Image 1 (cartoon, protein in one colour):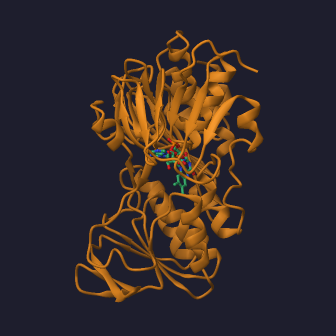
Image 2: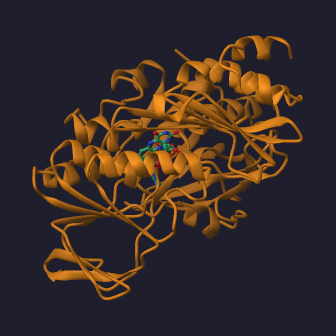
Length: 411
Ligand SMILES: Cc1cc2nc3c(=O)[nH]c(=O)nc-3n(C[C@H](O)[C@H](O)[C@H](O)COP(=O)(O)OP(=O)(O)OC[C@H]3O[C@@H](n4cnc5c(N)ncnc54)[C@H](O)[C@@H]3O)c2cc1C
C-alpha cells in the first residue's frame, strides 16, 4: 500500500499502453502519491500490435495484449476509470473536466492520449463498411467482415494496411491495396525492403495498385466500391482506410500547451509546470538524434513513461534512443532500427532469396539504419553497432562468416 501525503492525485489522461506503463513506472520508481488513470475506452489498457495480426488472422481475443490483469490496478493503488473521456484541461488551476461534467483536481498531469486513425474526407466516407483500425472494437468490427471471398480494399500501403492485407489474405479474402505513392512504405523503408514486401504480397494473391489516387466511396448505405481518381471503380464489401495516425492533441492545444504534430515536450517528457506527455501523442527533444521527434511505436510507449517517471520523481534524464519498430506480415518478420534518412551506402548481409537478410544504411562508414528481414536474432548486435556510432568495415559487415557479435564486440 502507498502512503499518499498529497490529497491531490497525479492524473494520467489516456489509459492505453503508455498510460498504463506510466502508472507502473511511477509505482516501480517509488511514487507514493495517488495515481488516477483516466481512459475513454471501455477496456482495461491493452497493446495494439496484435489487433492487425493475430486478432484478425487467428481470431485471437482482442485483449490478448492486455497490459496488466484487471486486478493489478487496485493492487497497485492505481485508480483506473475506463469509459471516462476527459473533455477539458485547465493547467493553471490544476483541474480537468470529464465529459460527464465532473471536475477533478490534480497535482501533476501526464497526457498519454495517443493517436487516432486518420480519416479521408471524401464523398461516401460515412458509408457502412468504410473502416479504420485503432481499437479492440475496430478490430472486432473488421473481423466480422473478413469472410472467405469477401472483397477487402485497403487504402494506404503502410504498416497497418499491409498487416491487415496479410491477415485478410490468410482468411481467404480478395484483397486490393491502393497506394498513392509508387512504392510501399516510401517514408519508412529503403526501396529494396519495400520491394521484398511488394513481391511477397503479390505472391500471396494481394492485388497491389501503386501510384493511384482515390476520389471517393460508392454505395447506398453500405460501401460497394472505391472510385479511383482515373474514374475506375474497385469493388469492395469492406474498405479499411490505413493512411496513418493523427496525434490526439486537441485537449492540450485548447489548454494552451504548445503543439506541433504532437504535444511539444522537452528532453525529459515535460510539457509545462507539472505537465508531461508520453507515447504517440508527444513530440520530444530526442537525445539520440538531437532533434524533435514523435514516434508511433510500441517501444516508445514502453520507454517514454520510464523517463517521465524519473523526471516527476526529481531525477530527470535525457530521453531518446535508437528507435526500433517491427511488423509481421504472413510469416515474415521485419525489424527496423533507426529512422529512414539519406544514406551514402547500402550494405546487404545475406541473400534476399534465402528469405533472411539484413540491409544496412551507412553514412561515412557508420551504420545509421538497419532493416532485418527474418533476422531478429541479429537485433542486439546490430543495435550495439549502431549505438557505438563508430566506423565499420562494409566488407566485414557484408560477410556472413564474420559474426555481427564479433564486430559489435570490437567497438
Ligand atoms: C493496429 C495497430 C498495430 C500496431 N502494430 C505495431 C507494431 O507491430 N509495432 C510497433 O512498434 N507498434 C505498433 N503499433 C503502434 C503502437 O501500438 C502504438 O505506438 C502504441 O499503442 C502507442 O501507445 P499510446 O499509449 O501512446 O497510445 P494509445 O495506445 O493509442 O492509447 C491512448 C489512449 O488514450 C485514450 N484517450 C485519448 N484521448 C482521451 C481523452 N480525452 N480522455 C480519455 N482518454 C483518452 C485513447 O482512447 C486511448 O485509449 C500498432 C498500432 C496499431 C493501431
